[in-house]
Image 1 (cartoon, rainbow, N blue to C red):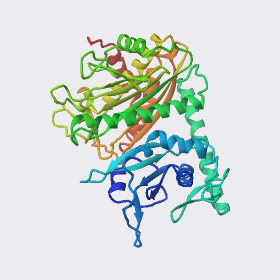
Image 2 (cartoon, rainbow, N blue to C red):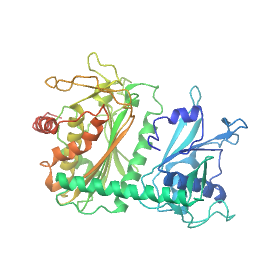
Image 3 (cartoon, helix red, strand yellow):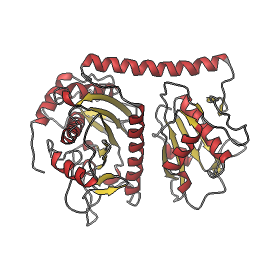
Length: 452
C-alpha cells in the first residue's frame, strides 16, 4: 500500500476491502485459530507490498460493512505487543506492524487498525500453522488475490509477479546504497545488522503509541495534536558507544544538545510539565500544554524518546503551520526550513553520539513527512530566497533514509541532508532542490549559538 496512513479515519468511517485493505470482524486473540487467521492476512499484505487490516466490522450482502457484534470490553488484546506476539509465532521473517486505535466520526468507540509494511526483499511465509491445519499452513506463502483475499499463489503469473516484487525491492536497496557511496555519505560505514533495524522500528512504533496516548485526552485540532501534519525522525547509533543508565543518559542529553535555531530538537527543559521522564526503559519528553492549559505553535510541541540502546525518536510539527504571517496552516512547505530542522536534528544526534564515546559508530537515519498533499512551496524561512510558480504536491507522505559515519560529520552533513530532501522537493512539480541552498543554509544554521 503506497500510503497506508493517509485515509485510516476514512477506512473506519466507511470500511471497504481492496487488495491492500482487509476488513475483519472481532477476533478472539486467545484462540490460536483466530491468531493464525490474522497472521495469514498480515503475511498476504506484506507480500503484496503493504496494507491495512481494519478490525470490528462485518460484511453485508450488498458488500458494505456494519459494526460487528462481539466488541471486547477493552482493546488490550489489540495492543502493539499483542500483535507482534502473533507475528513472532506465525510469521517468518518477522514484520514490524503498527497498531493504531481509531474512532468513527461522532463516536467514542475505537477500532484496531493494523498497518502492515511492504518493501520486503524476501518472501514472507508462515512459520507455524493453525490448529486445524487449514487456515494457515507452515512454510506456505500467501499473497493478496482478487476477491480480495489472502491466498497462496495459484498460477505461474502470480508467482512471477510475486518474485518480481521481491527482486525489485532488492534492486532499489542496492541502488540506494550505491548512490550513497557515490555521494560520500558512508565513508566508513559498517554493514547494518537486521536486528538493529528491527529494534529501531520497534522503538519507533512504541514511541508513536506513547505520543498517541499523550494527545488522546486533548480536544481535537489543538496545536499539540499536530492536526496539520508532522515529521518524524528515527535514529540508531550503530557501533560501539557507552550504554548509560537513564539518569546518566538524561544528564548527557541535557549537556550535549546545542541550540542552533532557537528551538533545538531533543530539547531538554527543566521545568514541569515539560521535564523529561523515565518511561518503559527510555527517556521521554513531551512539550504539551502548559500548566495553565495554554498552547504554543505546533512546531514547539515536540515529542521525543531516547533509549540507552542508542535509539532516538523525534516527532515535530511543521513551522509552516503556525505563526507565519499570511500563511494558512497545512498549505505550505518552505524551501529552507526542512534543511534547518533535519540538519539540526542530525547534528544533535551527532553531539549525543560523541558524548557517549561513539566516535567510530554510524548513524542510521529514517525520516517521514506527513500530510503533504495540497501544500505549496513557499519562501518564508529565509526571505532572501525567492520562490515562484506555486509548485504543489498531491502525495501525502514521504519517507527518506540514510546512513552516515559519526566520524564524517559535520563535514558530510550537506550530502546527507541533500540526499534525504531532494526526493521530497521533487514531489512539488519536479522542483529541483539546489544543493548549494542546502550547503549555505546548513552553514548559517550550524554557526548560530543560542542560550538554552
